[in-house]
Length: 347
View 1 (tube, rainbow, N blue to C red):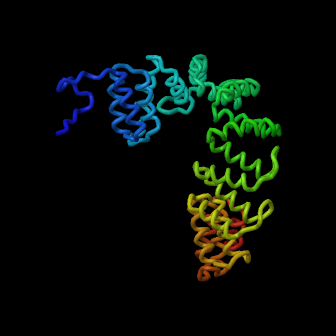
View 2 (spheres, helix red, strand yellow; view 1 turned 135 degrees about the vertical axis):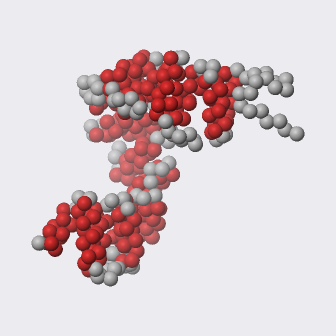
View 3 (cartoon, rainbow, N blue to C red; view 1 turned 90 degrees about the vertical axis):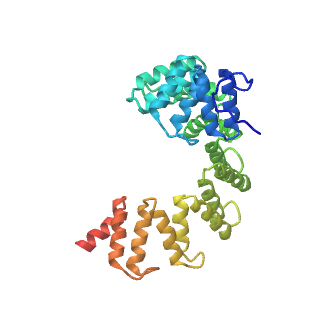
């Protein structure tokens, strides 16, 4: 017969009461096994003894609002504050983020910078990263790109993947492609998804490296599997255009459908236009289906084309009232062409 003890129960059946470090260890083990509610309860027990890391983790639960715990910025702020008071440097950084973004507290960029600097002096790499962003964008401090580069480089050299990517982006925009490639490669090795996507672009277009369609496709595929689903769309374009690899419309459509299933707007619009073209067997009904999917994302282009098809009776029974309703939606989302048509019809 198994006896289940409630978390935090006092000494029972000869078992000793657990100390804060034991509760923390149990919390981590539970979290790693995806037993998130159990982890949360163990963190709570450790936090009762002012275990700074447990207090921080509870702040994370409430701040992120994931793992079955409702988002609560007030609770997050309270736990981060207590964690910081008991020595958690990471909690200082999170408090700075809350002041920067105005979560629970009023936006106070001066306070945020103060906390970032305090955490950065204690070697918190995320604080250094956010501080670099502030200097890069002139947010709360005078813009200083040299200092931003300095901060990004310091933590990038120590393996901070996001800093490596941001550095690569700065060098890319400055057309220093060798340096961009260097930092992209390092970030990509750590599965930093934006770096993988950009590295694929380098291989697709022959920037620093030779054009290599296969490597580009593999990298775009990897980025997509890491939830940067535009990668599927980019692979589709490679096959559709046929400039660096043999043209293959079947493969292109396959990848467009993959991208479309993840609501990549450009893929939905491209599929719709394909089914209206002579590149494949025309199918206006399918075109309308993809335009409607794109319209759910408030695409003015999708609404405009639905209006055009309804007005011409292509895939629809000809219906000028329906067409006008689509044109009005398109105009609402910024289509000047649609607005011109409305003005003409109502003029």
